Amino acid sequence: MTVQSEHEYQKSWQERQTYAENMLPIIGQLYRNKGIEITVYGRPLVNASAIDVIKAHKSVALHEESKLRLRESYPFIEALNEMDIEPSKIDIGMLAYDFLFKGKGEGLTEKEYLAKELASIQHHNGSDAKDVVLYGFGRIGRILARLLIEKAGPSSKLNLRAIVIRPGKAGDLAKRASLLRRDSVHGAFNGSITIDEENNVIKANGAFIKVIYAKSPSDIDYTQYGIENALVVDNTGIWSDEEGLGQHLQSKGVDKVLLTAPAKGDIKNIVYGVNDDMILAEDNIISAASCTTNAITPVLKAINDQFGIKNGHVETVHSYTNDQNLIDNYHKSPRRGRSAPLNMVITSTGAAKAVAKALPELKGLLTGNAIRVPTPNVSMAIMNLNLKQATTTEGLNDYLRQISLNSPLQNQVDYTASTEIVSTDLVGSRYAGVVDSQATIVDEDRAVLYVWYDNEFGYSCQVVSVMYKMAGIDIPTLPVKA
Image 1 (cartoon, one colour):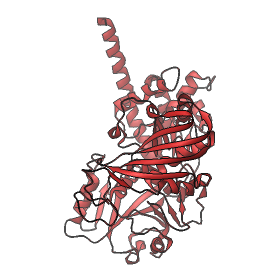
Image 2: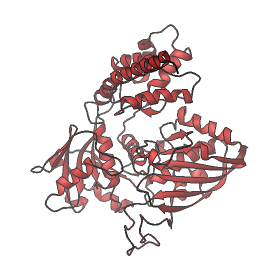
Image 3: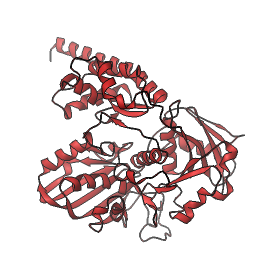
Image 4: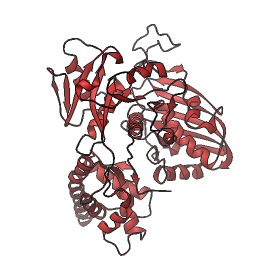
């Protein structure tokens, strides 16, 4: 490399960094003030660093013939900031690439092109914000809180108003706030958290969250806190049937209930992106199914739609959970009493059978089992499938890559071609599942797929999507792909 080429490289890098740094304030304002989430070929830029923005643009070359430069996408970010549009998820990378390299904006300025492509979400009043109560504040509850606080602002459609926990001892509020502030897996909270002990309130990035201490739903009158027609998200795991969850509906100020676990009986188990069209305005109790069901069902639907599935087996390699013991001790379930950080533990999972509740065409076609392993987060589903139509490794991978980019499942299914990716690389993934294409095995009509998933964060993102749907709030993804 010559001195001149080194100089040119450094100049190019500085230019990219400058554009990225200039983008970040605009991306933040769009998110907080208008509810617009910016992505580049599926990679989220909200709360990203300048380096994250540069890497997202670099990834475009993995999917297209030409790369997308930051100086080429920057005018679209600026134009978007001047538009009056509804809360949505907008892939500015795809829009810019279509305009620059696919001739879709011929004869138009960037702003005119965006006005045409985003016409469906302009000058629309939308729906009112929905009050949200988190009943329980464990792993899922705290991640849901982070996600809801992240969206707090003038355009927020889901307002986290309260958290309900069992009565605690002195200092409980400070400890709860500390657990929200610091997380051994997901890192520090991105912002400021303070507490008001006199009023039992946690203040976080503009969100004013009442902490309610109660032993059961019947103890609570939410209206006394100014909470009306609330969506209660039960993440305690205590109740899973209509009778138990129905207790929430007896509390004043509650309109609907969402369970963050598989439900029993006739309660609808929803995997967002697959069967969320089953949610009706009159439904007042819904389940968001399990993390594993959410991870595997979108991929299974995509494969079944294209190739058909005769039958198969799903083996889950799952991180240990709080249900297991740190050291050997009594546990009501087989093997789960053995030390979680020291052992691989064979256990059962209902995820394979639960798929049928979201995807009835696969009823009775799948078996499943699970192995709990000594990692605190991120899991993997290994799907051994017999297909109705033969294919190749390249054919199946290419199809799933397109699903991740250009389909109604693009917010659920992610795709990686990395030969070096490991579980910790997936911490914080916002997708229900990530297809590891380098591990795919195909032998004519038999396929083995490996799907990673952050069983905490990715699942919580799915839960939030169900919350929006239950609240009657539509957050479209644009540009619309077939």
